[in-house]
Image 1: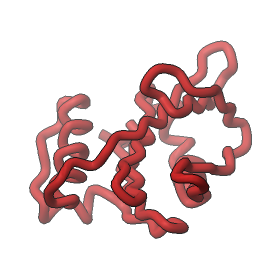
Image 2: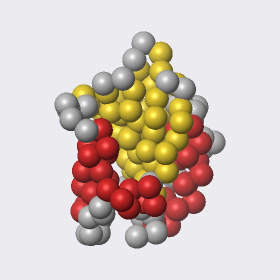
Image 3: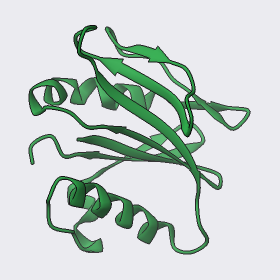
Image 4: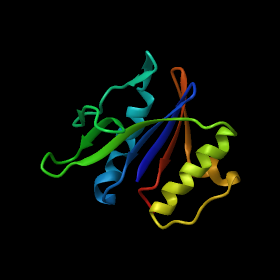
Length: 136
């Protein structure tokens, strides 16, 4: 799994891809590049797609679906927007990271471990937290 939370104002933008390690691991740098390119205009994110990635439009809860890998059997990366509930943002981020870990049958981490298990990205007008779980 490759995942990130991008916090912009009172919204959390979730970028998440779940797929075979063999398809995700080579995309870690492209995923980081995608996140680093995120800019907000009118409250919505815009980005530059990495080479070979494709974008589909909105669908249901999805703001966007990005695809990479073989056209006939691509890996999807979903982009979903949710409001941030009141309370401590660090706890909100940790609870989402632990939810992702649980989806992969990994043990939860404590708040003190979050810095070692994630990477903070300073974006234009937002903060991103990237989590690379491809090696787990």
